[in-house]
Image 1 (cartoon, rainbow, N blue to C red):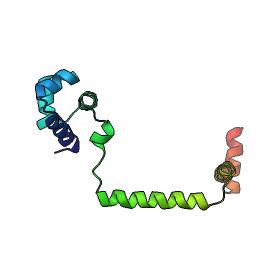
Image 2 (spheres, rainbow, N blue to C red):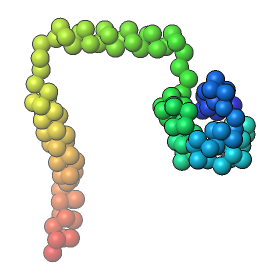
Image 3 (cartoon, helix red, strand yellow):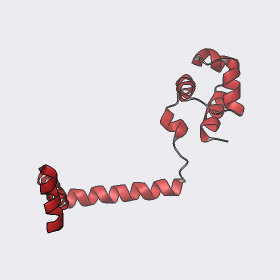
Image 4 (cartoon, one colour):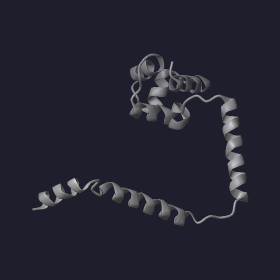
Length: 128
């Protein structure tokens, strides 16, 4: 069963809503609501309406399941990165970006050059 289906059912049941009531609130036909909650895939338009009716964001409904320990590790890594950035001396990111772009441009020009004299002669013949 999809996470979205579990989320919809859990909130619907917690609010003691019938499929009929959810259909009335969301504007999605009752038969469709019943199908989505039991077996059918759900079109994004219906998911938006049902999520809104249940007070859920699509992010909450469709975000992949993540283990709590993974979240803790990611939060710790993010905090460490922010701490390191706070201690680092400010950098001129615009200058760094310009150097990268200039280097990429030089690299692309180098690949556009003829590799041999023979290729150079072909280009001249093509231009005539």
